[in-house]
Image (tube, rainbow, N blue to C red; front, top):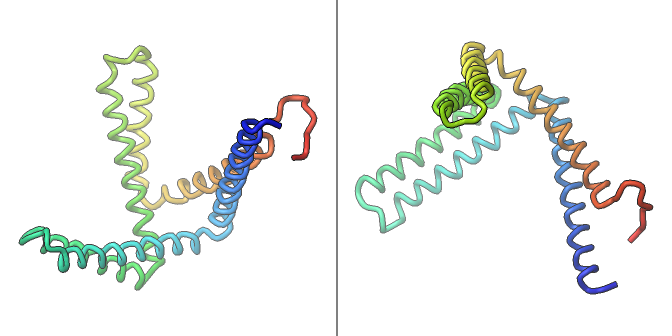
Length: 192
């Protein structure tokens, strides 16, 4: 075998392994989210609360110990850091309530995002070759965003189910891709 063939086979094998690992992780995450939804939400919230505390301490440190920032910048870093730390501590104090609040914030962002996406799509109506599809997309996006905002926490289970189903489906497809990558239709399988 030539050196370039061996090198490309090595790269190819690395890609297959990466696809298999990422697929397995997505599949496992989807199953965990499906089987233990509340525990998973609490764990995700705990990770986010940990991030807030660590980021807050970093900002406090920047405000106190950096010599480059003066006056308002230092005070701003310290105040932002303290806000992050307090937010993280409050989240840790009741992770279940914090998980519900975080879910509501995410749903609100999704709803607002869809509304803004629809409005932006409407601004492109004159520049797009497919006006009917753009208009349809914009209207659906705006209506879906408004519906999500009015549903509030009632929309969370729908998004959770979509997230878990997506992770499971993507994980399975990724694993199948890893197994079948590079195989030609009808070609015999060779062990390397």
